[in-house]
Image (cartoon, rainbow over all chains, first blue to last red; front, side):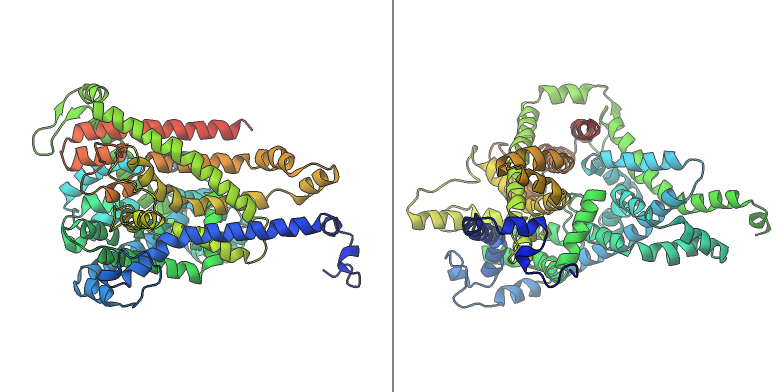
Length: 296
Length: 297
């Protein structure tokens, strides 16, 4: 920035400027414009299903089959109707509760295990690490039958605990946290030890604050994963009261004679919260997703 | 406490480590490893959940090989894979490659492409299901009608149903792949391209000689990640075909839906467990291929 402040752009000795001044400038700008317009059109197409979902949830029944995106007379009666029914309230609360508890459990346990495997030297370390890592290879679908039988014999069917217990810790999260604890210098931990902190205090007050970005990335993944989870909640719940939003929406949509605008309203209720969170923390979430995707 | 004080520093470390790991090790043992063994065990048994569990040896696997529905499902599952993976790979690469060159409103464009990833599969399956309805209900057929194009039977046709179910799955996963590709593109040093430009190398050669070879780890990651996703497809199929799960005529039924039906509608636990073992083996092969490909670098 400060290297050559008084030189005009073109004269700055960077290779970038060198090529900007090339004679092909004009067609390239033309190409840029076309590229931008195509990308913009594609982006609009990508959000169309979401836009139509929200638009239809605001339409009167007589207008639903009109292809207009903007409702002629927007109304919120669909929402009051669906919410007055009471079930969506319950399902929303169930999903929120389950996703929150599971996220907190993952943040706690995954980082504790990741930290221990990263910073402690003890017999059995390698074995524990490989054992946990190998569970990444086991698909959930293979475990649902034994989990169901287990829940049946312990009376966990149709309960919050039954929905939550399989996801309280994940190998993905453990591995992610272990990777990030590598960046915490051993000297910090050593210094804290000399100061007389015990190992639990060191983990919680010294190491954890240094991996906050990783914790946030993990929280996003775990929360979103549990908010949208379908197969296991579908299997383990029986009563309407215990359904999560996806299971509830699925059964609601399958009821005879439910109007499409009401299904779209239910779909919007289960989608809009995550979209709002995303729009607020956009940059942060995208960075977290890349971090988790590449390191995990 | 005196016992603890008498330990050496190293012994204290070991004690702490195992204290931290005690609950998680129990968890992984009881919730991951024991069920894995249990699933394999049940796959050799005959059990309808109410009666006795009887040993049946390889009977479930024999039944599977002889079951025409299984082979139909097997074919469907791989159709999801061999259609879904290349389509989403090529689309996400093209979009990421172009998006990487755009500065104007870059983060807005990126947001538009990423938004579907934040939706719930069940909710969007119902939205797409509505799109696919015949006139006067469905959006797509209404649009076709306005343009004067003949109607398309999306979910009611044995040939169109599978791609129709696949489309929202590809759509929802695209944003994630684009973001990962863009991170991969950013990691390639600019000096490589500068050197190429000085040598007068065209964009196609730059793409095939610099970009794609250097993106190999990213490509392998995305291929495996999306392959596993398509092999395990369930939410979209289940919700788009609730009136006739996996239909019409099993045309859309993937392996996970067959497992679900066998276990929780027919309560044929042994047979369902054998199907999960098959899924496990398929996913294991895909994961091992990934390790192979990454290692041979």
